[in-house]
Length: 246
Image (cartoon, rainbow, N blue to C red; front, side, top):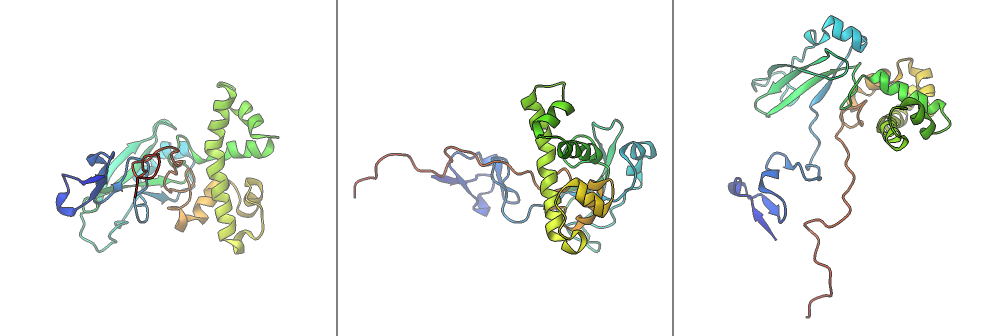
């Protein structure tokens, strides 16, 4: 059974049983209970092209030169009140800040992420590249994890490495398969892609994939976080047992 959300009864939004009314909104859908919203995922991070390292970016306060002249949702001619929203800080590296803008009509903020930073992952993109390069040079993921993170136990070190390795391999594969004229038949590895594009490799991958960053996985792209499907009962399942009598 289900009910119409009280706050939005005039819009007739159906809420399945077991889902809190506050989690269902007309613009975001079921946003917080594991199911993605319908339609294309809104991109709220945008690329700021820069050749600076993260240390140079902090020293030169590169966020002060970041500019976004048009609203990503409504375009340059729209009167949506698009404006700067200051900056927000990143933990690593120390002193890093990211420029942010806001569209009051869309109720959405946008950030300009410089090429030196990893998306939705603490630290910079070069550090992620170092991890992937270490795995490619090691006999196994476990061997690389044991060397990279001796401060924690091996299972935790493997998880730490795979959080960086898996999305990076997916982004490399997407770039290789979508740009055969640029990369030909090279393997989706740092070594081979770097031989064609140059170093640092992941920065070049982000630049070459700029039009597809909204669908590429983080930390290179700005795509949504993919959650594993929950195993177990959901509110839409029926009770177990024999069929009712005719």
